Image (cartoon, rainbow, N blue to C red; front, side):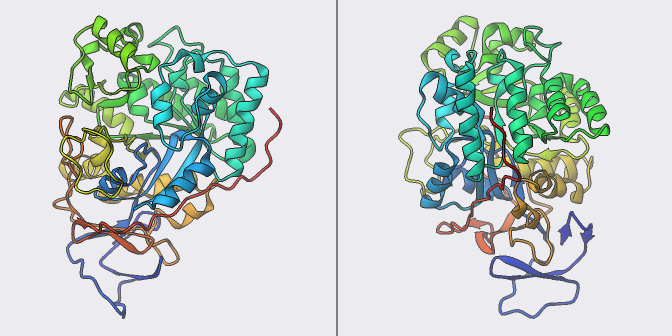
Length: 486
């Protein structure tokens, strides 16, 4: 039994009553029901800060990867009240929660997009230049008010996709960070490009996040630092080292893959932006068809015909030792969390009923949606030994819980395994746990998760999903202060 908070790492019994852990004991406990997990590892369930795959099928894949709480924080949504209500009406295998969405609020205000609890409204419109245009003072005020209302309704912070609107006025970014600071919640930022990679951006993406933390006092969470930094990760690490040493409230996350996934209409996938990022059209693969984009002309055609189509973008070569080192530098940043950036499914036809399992043949997604956590355990601990098992577990559970604790006090009961904590418990086979998902077959579930309990109920039992189990509960934020007027 491993508890990353206390450092407890011994053979022990874990006692659960209802939805809480009530005891951890090296002396056998008496109980009405005992489950023998000899030879297995028992630890807190994993907490994913960055999961765009919020529906039941996506959450089931994550359950088989050890996740007990999956949160949509980088893109976020609006209105969050509707998102929480929709998830509750369907039920969820895992705990769930949302940030409010700066990008969707802008889309609503500037191009008339209708609010949508899923990420699809954002993906469909990422490539529309209208939402990236300058906002008037009145428009900014309405965007600000929408974000504020979502925070009052339990949003876990503010998701800021500024990397998809790279020419937006930096003052607007600072304004939104100021709102987060006043509300006592984090921001979750997809950064703009680094200035040495793209001199056309008005501010360096890494410096902007750090500067906003210093100027406003907001907790600025730096999303998927591996994909936005790529081969410039040491530059970003040096900036983060200095800022954090000076007391800036900045946290980071990364995922263990050298390929991203997004909508093909994203600003940074325009041909001229690809060149600046040392990428080529052939680094892009269309998820639905498997087409590798052959040249700039084809890229322009695809961006025009279906700007919301999901693609996989290879930014590091995972088989190259030098690129592997860059990825490690992102994954192993001190105090950094593992987060998946899990994507929604691309279905072979109309989406099936939510409870459908197994998934229909031909269902597609990025492999990080199914394999992030098992892959982290396999590559960082078991195969390469660059971290201890408790260290990897902490990056997947305790560290993400701590990032959220000030905004969501309920997270103080998650990410640890101790008396009084939530019974979100993972039991896995340390010799077998591994990812199976690939870039060709992204929905192959991980193996090695033997049991998974969410709020004391089995979601995975004896290595199989419990198909009628939907014990997930909402994780809500709690604004600590009143926000000022915009």
